Image 1 (cartoon, helix red, strand yellow):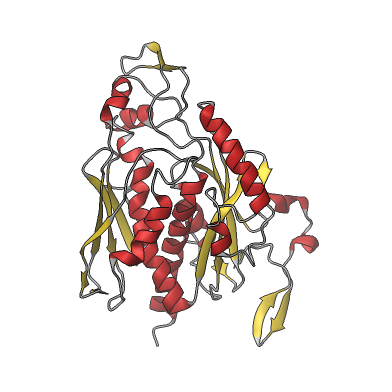
Image 2 (cartoon, helix red, strand yellow):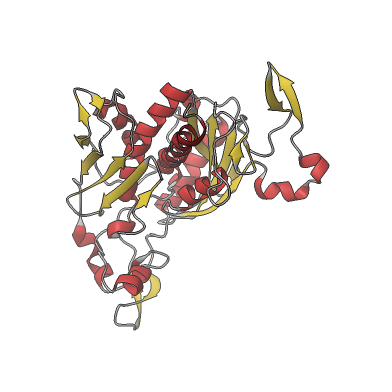
Length: 362
């Protein structure tokens, strides 16, 4: 069905609903002879799974991945790779009221308006469990980018509500990001973020914030004019994530406060390569990578599910109220970090393969 696939040469299609038998992904276009087992994929799914700390949803899922096709004796075949994760902790009865009532700011009403039918158990296809397929596919993309192209992809929580971390995207390390449950590499700010999210959870409410994504080692030349500009595809990937509401790259919206002379990244030769003295472009110019670190930000709204009664309407188009119930993340950001990394990897690998197909065929 339209809208469930992403990518051109490295193409994924996700499938499944929150309370169905499971969720998964089909990856088409993966190069052959790549070493690949479930052990390459599981670590990123463990970072995404629910129930991992006190500041995420308490739903208990092991999110154990199985590779069903596309590999033989631990290597990729070049054929479609199918991966599956079983749903283990569905509690559909908690959503019975939602069968006839639309949750505010969820996709209940819009799915009904579009299809005339919806899966109200846990949100069905609109649930964040859909992102399991993205993260699994992204783990493959990250492995290829790391081993074949020397590209490192990271993401971290930059801001929760009004708490902003001072992080240098050029030097931040994975170990620093994973050193705490909120995945903010600035320890002092992380502690404040954790306390804020925990207080919000206990109050039955939710908060949003910003994740910063980075890609180091991307060579100059990846990206396509005009509609497939690298930042345009990154934006589409990030804004397709649940609860995402904004995207900017490099200086982003802050760049409007500078003049052209202040904003320009001046070129110099360093080590025989074209480099820039600053990186306000965020590693992308004219929609094509310039060899500098790519960095961008994704804004995520407060999770729509709150533990308070709210005004709404029912499927009978009558005004009513909805009780606050269900398991939810008081802040989506800690679990969204591997999702942002996955979408970054999917975009970059797709463009890497497109670059090789068009310009590096000799």
